[in-house]
Length: 142
Image (cartoon, rainbow, N blue to C red; front, top):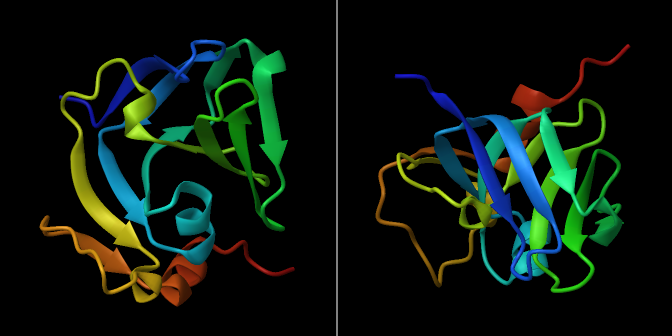
């Protein structure tokens, strides 16, 4: 069985529809301050690669949230559509957007050092601090 699937989904109002080729089956939670401010809690994210196509792109607004990433949302209903890395156009999308969320496994958490004490997931996961995330994924300096 493959660790990736093609998945389709949409925003709450249906103005934006998408297909994510090669979406991962493993999802994680980001506890960074920006993600928690963006959605009111941790951002549950599914890595969807770079092959994501949209219908209704005119309904997508972008927010330039940092030097390395931007966030997309539906301008009609406000649904958070994606977190996208600027350098390689890698999409992270909420599993709740997809028509079929079967077979997903919650297995990792990032920015665990920024997670507030008022919540905790029961799942056993692989956890990384913010420093560990930047060390693992930072672009090599030239």
